[in-house]
Length: 351
Image (spheres, rainbow, N blue to C red):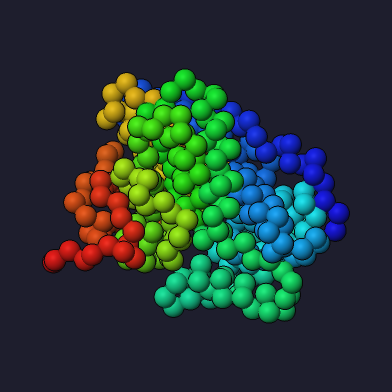
């Protein structure tokens, strides 16, 4: 498989857009980095970084396959990186992945392996990771990027943070969704080199274990986790918010109707928190990252039947977060906590 390195020139300079749509209330506005306008999407930055790092260390041989688990977005990035660098890509997905996204991954030349049942403890993520190890046994020379624990993942997003520092005069608050932990860790590293006092707000989904919540079934994809990624830079966060699917759907639809720029679960979640941050931090410059666009969500977030069946429409949603004193308190909707710690290291608090 021959690479096409000219593609790598497409991975930069995505625009910053000013967003002032009411989410759900009026707010002063925030800036959104539109990674959906980058070839391969936001996670192409991480994918290229992980593959070039592995090639440099000799872990990925020329022409060898790349095998990884994905809920969709990283898969597009790896398909991009595989074409650019000359590596076939095998992606392990689960049956919950949208048919359109599965077709897109295959159209870009990836081989797609589908997991049919979630792991009893680790959910779909652990089931996909188990299948990755099975595929690796069949392809012994294949490289597994291990996006959740590979330091080349956040390193790939330093360019995103550097672009933000060139595009805007000042940043007071950066709002990032958290899944593998890559883009929040890499972007804040670059931005704080320029402005050390920038606050970092992490945005997770209810039912995710990343910040100490118990694992629960999750509708939202692209953020959150049923495992504990080691790329999450816990010490860099000033606070964390958990968003429920109803709030994310409302935010995505409001963006579509009143800002034209919209996206999926992560985009809705960070938009809601960014609007809140711009209200409560008077005069602050708030910046966030919209990881992808709306197209893969036309059958979910933007489909009335899908949303009504799951109780995501025609019900009241929160206009501000409930605050909890410790992340061990289980949440069910939009919630904020100003204590952020690694749940694998945290000491349990008394009941």
